[in-house]
Length: 182
Image 1 (spheres, rainbow, N blue to C red):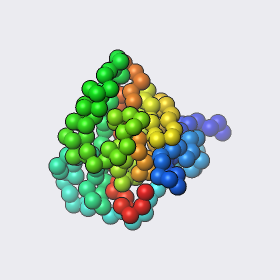
Image 2: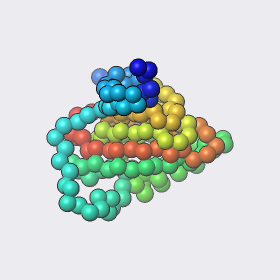
Image 3: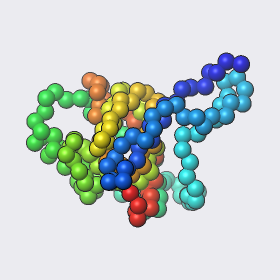
């Protein structure tokens, strides 16, 4: 039997002892069950004790903001603008500050030294690049994502940089996490 299972790249982030964000692992996920030709179950990550309310008819009908509701989740698609030319650093900072303010997320911009889009939320995020080529920046690491690469973002300071001249499209599930830990 040939292995026709997609090579799903999984990048897992975390914080070191001093709270600096970094990549913990970057490899094909080992959590695969093959159950016949063309059939496979590929786990990227798992959590426990989440209790969604299945009686809600439109779970996206809420006040939009970057973070999920306390104790909840948000499933979203987001788009990154094409890379810009040599933009003025002050303009880039002003634009990022305005964007995070619109998303009620100014408080998440804890250290923007590396990039004006850096932010850190107390969430576990599952992110998949659908279209484009994107660089993920962390405090001490970075990596380039290709379509269908997956990031397990674990409450780390990060930013996204579109490396192409077309909009990049990403899908994400954000889960509120225990705010007592980094």
